[in-house]
Image (cartoon, rainbow, N blue to C red; front, top):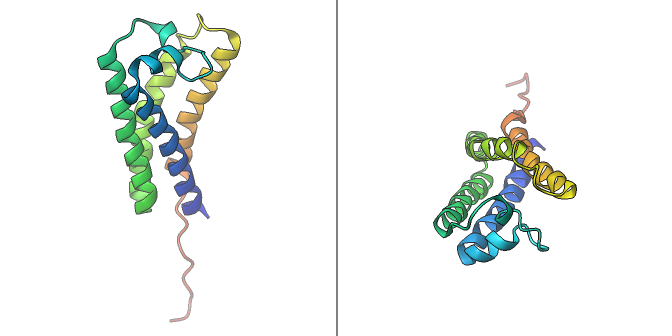
Length: 141
């Protein structure tokens, strides 16, 4: 059960991360102006447009997505935990930054930003700390 849960979580996180990576690579200005969609413009409210930075963000998200999905396919506990650590190394500083930089957003946007970023921390933590189920050995040879 735990291995299936771990794989599902890795794939879900990987797919979301891939989508977040593709958009800035395909349309850096569109990502800057409209992320997360629905004309919210979270990125544009946080500073000037920098195509290089936005493309790098997209590429790094794709690299992380490949790591997460690859870990799900490989299926070992060690690789899943390594992918979770990689995700946390991105997600924790990103979340901490936004904890102190959401005051200029509307309350609903603040809640959405912090809750989605908190999920980005929580999911890898679950993957990291879900214990591996070991098969029960019979007492008879």
